[in-house]
Length: 67
Image (tube, rainbow, N blue to C red):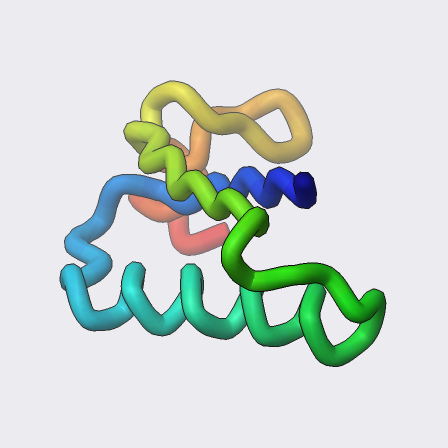
């Protein structure tokens, strides 16, 4: 049973966009690896930008600074 975990920042991804991510990941596993969509699990985790960092700085701070 394939398990896909997609992590995105919590910035207003719509229900339709999340559904497209789930459908796309499921189709990719079916098309590339021949996995059964009925047993493929896709989970989307949304992370606050204060809880994600790049280069030692939070995403929130980097965006405020324009970097």
